[in-house]
Length: 262
Image (cartoon, rainbow, N blue to C red; front, top):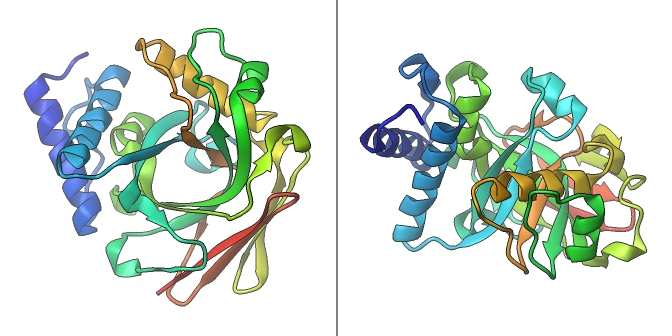
């Protein structure tokens, strides 16, 4: 690590304030070009600590930049990982207030819920499938706090991978009942299809993203506990939303999920 604990705490407060008060900031590596990956994840962990201290609950984890479309869109070639708290959760069909966000985008997700813990190193697709209880359809609302979308991946990781909201569907399907690679995905805004894809767009198999997360945490001596809900990453590129947009996601065999932006 290159940053001191004091700087990490200050940057965490800086980024979380931007999230909570919905204003943008310049990427933090402008002022701290020396920061490394451990610093970035330490800042993210401090943001989580702040939220838990205020009474938020950790309800899940997320993988980001796991499809080639998202990597191309963001100009990167590696995945990233973040956390989800209960304050981010939105009920299926509910309204999402745009004045609480900066420049939100939506992306379709295949969501995993574990029945057994996962720990790397050495975690692979088979390990993930054996540990998964069921899968669901989900929408993630990402909302980078960085001005004009000018950022690098370390700054994104520190900012909890642009996490802001997520919506889960109401249909839980046993993982053995579906081929996650071939699931068709259609996301619509106001009844018009805006993105189409298949599960294989996520690293060839959505479970590969969960394995990467387990191996990432394993490098820090941590595991993914049983019962954890995990967003496996956007199947397609993220799409911007505006006031009065209704977003609906349909995933073959997993049903649909949606929300309105007001």
